[in-house]
Image (cartoon, rainbow, N blue to C red; front, side, top):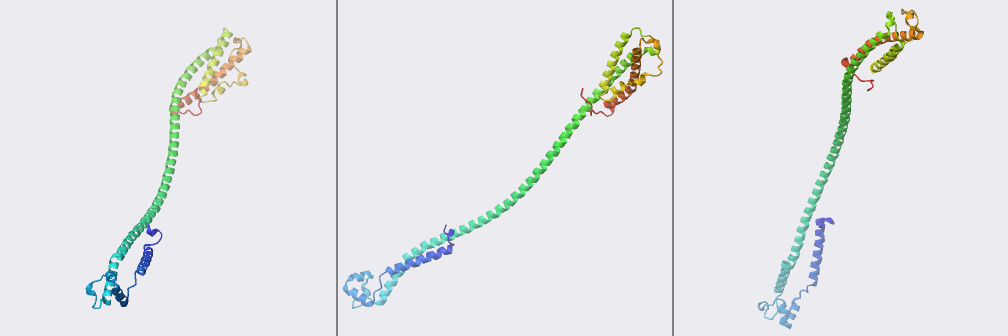
Length: 304
């Protein structure tokens, strides 16, 4: 493009300089216009010179000499013809080049304007993209916070549901354990009534059988304490708490009904244990009922 190195008017100056140099060189190479004496001599020498000057018989005077005015007219005509043809063609070509340069300059101006518009659009787009990226970052942070809160809520909700199901399961288990404890309590009381009949003055016929029954009774006490420990951990130790001083003192049983002191100690131990059992059984029932109906909760209760 011509406008890439120089503006269009610069190229016009260069073109004009070239045209002036060409015109000067062309005029310099033209033959010099002869004087009237030289023309007369040339005409007298032969008809060749007359034909080269566009000879016409009526242009000669009586002496055969061309008038100077006519020579000037012929030179002006030739110069006019030259200007009207050759130079006009030259200038016409340069005129086309000038129009081309003008169009190229217009296109260059449009391109600059388009580039400026594109630059403004790019800058605007860049700013908008930056704003959009900032907004996307804020949205992403909000989504991350929302996801975190949703995960926390989901985790808490799942934990609550798990705890709720555990509570429900615990409630059903508490109902089952309450029935089991009631049955064991009835069995323990019934067995203790037979083991402590000497307190009512009844004689034990076979202490070997009595010892075997006492062992089975203690096993039921242990089973009862294992179940109750799910709700009250101190129940087994409280039921089995038989201090030595509680076995001494004034007891109302008849010593003659016992074959030995060991039998007396075993009898009194059973009696103290049964007293402890009766005290703890009411406490255990209240706690198990609370687990089953009032406020079900499995916290701190082992699964077994």
